[in-house]
Length: 253
Image (cartoon, rainbow, N blue to C red; front, side, top):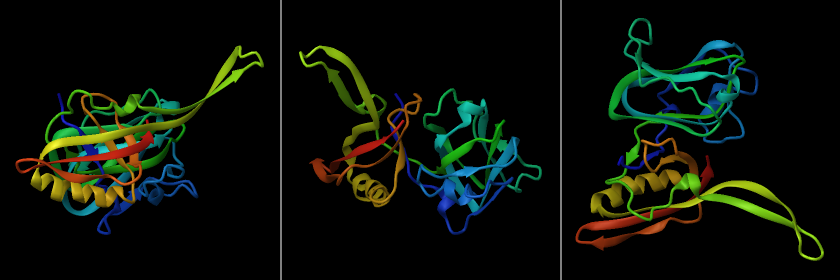
């Protein structure tokens, strides 16, 4: 079983990054696609094939990209991440196969070995133009081992509010559901001490303020876009030179 991955680094945020797009609708500028907020985002004017291109300033490692709050499924479109050494003037390589989403759930694509490149772009085909709430790419944080028995599957941890309608005599008249996304817990144990003190700590610095992508098993399309719910579990000494960590999350599918 594949190990869980957390996508929280977003190289689009770097001050050394220069981003260009084919075009953009007013009030849907390219910068709105990497502020981690889902109520705004980028949308092109042009239909057909458009590009969202990133010059990182120097070659950097990328092993994941993610997207949430898109309308690509509504337009029957596709999206593919590409990389280059010469700003796509001749050297054009695919990060992985194109994604053609059948619904509007989170997209999260990874590779086993990180790819180092300076120039990256999403090639998007969509008619009409699609909307993208959040785009991210970078190096993911991989867990030390696969999840254990009893681990919560975030995709199934639905945080719905149920409202029953009943008659005066108590007869069931129907039910309304308010979808509030998901509510779950991430928990890892018997981790190397350095993982808890360095890797996990760096992730918590991000999660204190911003959301992230969480895939309990990248072999399944079950990634959620999550944010910290209350304070994290304190990193605790587990056994000889190992620690356990955890985090309560809420999020979107």
